[in-house]
Length: 149
Length: 112
Image (cartoon, rainbow over all chains, first blue to last red):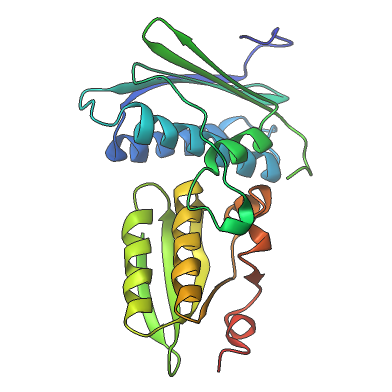
């Protein structure tokens, strides 16, 4: 699902990285660049939005590496990152196993996992997953709220 | 992720973390905490001042440490979280069980 474009991106970048822990390190460097205030002079991303984006994107990338592509040594993740005046859109594609929504345990049982999707959803305006053929597609959008966090 | 352990007296310790507590580092951090608890350090403070990023794997490691400490009759507290760790604790609602203290001394109060 694509949102109707309300304006053109002021910065876009595309990357592929291995769906491994080393690949995640490389991806964090790409993300640091996208969120860097100096990237688009005069249009800094509000701090609370940058924190939410970094958190949500980290969860989805971690999910792909940990769950979708485990046991697939040559798996790669394709990433598209687009920065607009009012939002960031991120797309991810991988050929790992289909995503299955995890069951969330009650908080008072002190669950050891299952927080990732909850955190990503709460940090984004759009979190969309589709499986087309053998490819997983993720779309993440956060509109800048400034003070929201 | 780097971490070091500082003893603060009988069964009390501070674990100082630096870097990212994420998918890459969570398992080894959780193992270290569980080993410390098994060795008798059951009342722990995790200093997050130097941690720039925590993901859900890192949260799971902290919860795992909290569980291990409580089973041993102790507790695990976190101190000085920076903005992103504070955010993920709030948005996951885990700040209800992992209370963040503003200073190490505040977190240690009641332990000694």
